[in-house]
Amino acid sequence: MALATSAAASTSAALPVPSGRSGSLGLVGAPLSPTLVGPEALNDDPIKDMNGIQRAAALLIALGPEASSVIFKHLRDEDVEAITVELFRMRQVSAKVTDAVIEDVYDQLVASDYMETGGLEYAQALITRTFGPERGQQLIDRIAQKVKKGPFDFLREIDPSQLVSFLAPEHPQTVALVLSHLRP
Image (cartoon, rainbow, N blue to C red; front, side, top):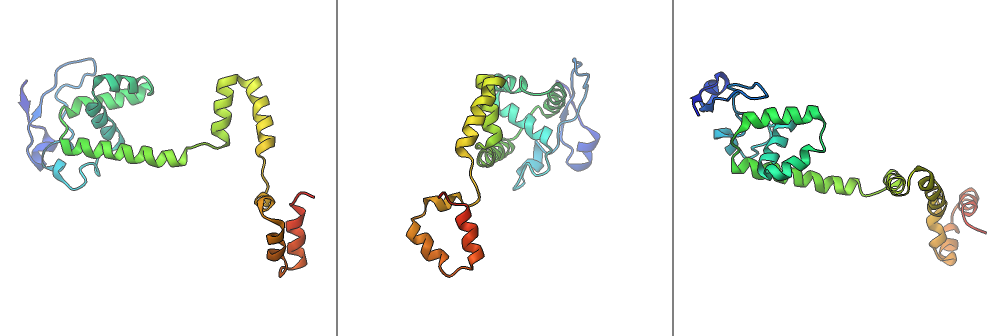
């Protein structure tokens, strides 16, 4: 494989850039992404200047072809094309960049796990997918009646004597509001 120097790379660090071969993507001589190899990869945060496509490509390189092909099956064609172009440009990714990308993905997954743990939308999607739209809606309606909560439902779990002592110094309007939300 012949080495060429890209114009962008020669202005910053004169990194050697492998020249591309003709392929279905038509990316002959595409330069490497400069943030992924060379001195830039040695920064404290080697992925801070990487865009999402570059991070995705670096992750797929780290995961290998089998896992990457499974991921590609779940992406839109436009995303697959954009990532493939970046894969062609990368060719090499430093270990520090790979570690940083994997750590970033892990952090995002952990954070999203806390945000996407359930709720009404998730339950509806799960029930509808499992039982079909008609039966799923019947189940959702029945379940919704059971879990329907009001603003003062937590008071139903409190010992009545404690509730009396909490409400004793309150205004009559406050007491009336609270009592109106309790079962007789």
